[in-house]
Image 1 (cartoon, rainbow, N blue to C red):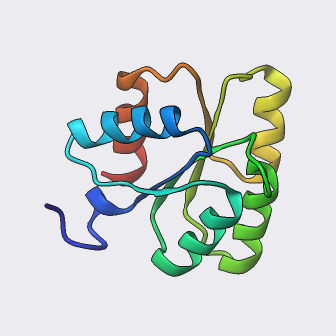
Image 2 (cartoon, rainbow, N blue to C red):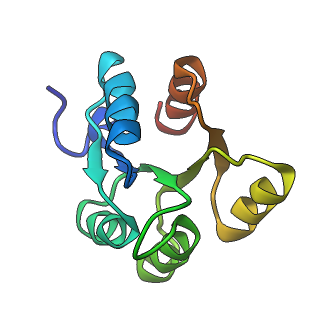
Length: 127
């Protein structure tokens, strides 16, 4: 098992849908990564502040605090040292991708998630 703080454990998934979270987590684990999981934007912000992951996969549509608001809160709290954030959404249109860039997301991962694209992003940002 990777050591705490290693690149393989430095991933956080912020996803309110249990099935989507399980699929994403399973895909990552099959490739040797050990992601943490937050169930909504508020929990995600708290976990980022506490655990300081290097990479965050964040759903855009969640209760209590959506992905855009969570990204804004993370940037404010982390004061320039926020992790790489990847937006995860089923609505990856040009307008949504532009809004994600404006909100500070590095890129957008469209649903349904393709494992090759997911692992490519992880390697791009962590390795």
